[in-house]
Image 1 (cartoon, one colour):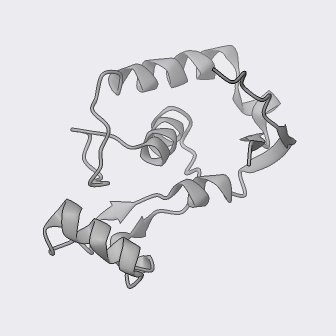
Image 2: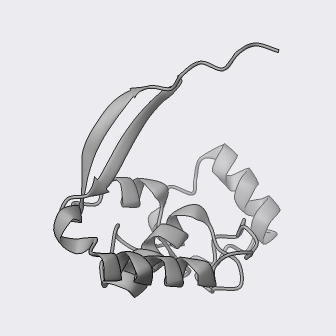
Length: 125
C-alpha cells in the first residue's frame, strides 16, 4: 500500500557513539557479498535480511534486536507455507533451526517508531 514505518534504537543518542558506528560498519562489512539465504539458516555462509540486522547489532553493540526463535515456532500448517517448505527443504524442514523474523526485529522493545507515512509514488513508465 505504499506505507512505511521507520524504527530506530530507542537509546540511539546514547548507543550510537562514533566508535559504535565504526564497529557497526566493521561488523556489517563481514557480511558484504554474502548470498541471500532463502533457507533461513543461522550460519554465516549466506544471510537473510532480519538475520543481518540481528547479528550486526548483537556483534557490534551487544544488543539482541528481536527474539530468536526456532523454525518450529512458526505457523507451518498454512498451505502456502507448506508448499514453500516443500520447495526449499524438500519436505524436511530443519525445525530446530534458529531464525529471527522481520516481525521479531520490528517488534523489538529496543526500537521506537520515529516516522510513518506514505512512500512517494513512482512515475508510471
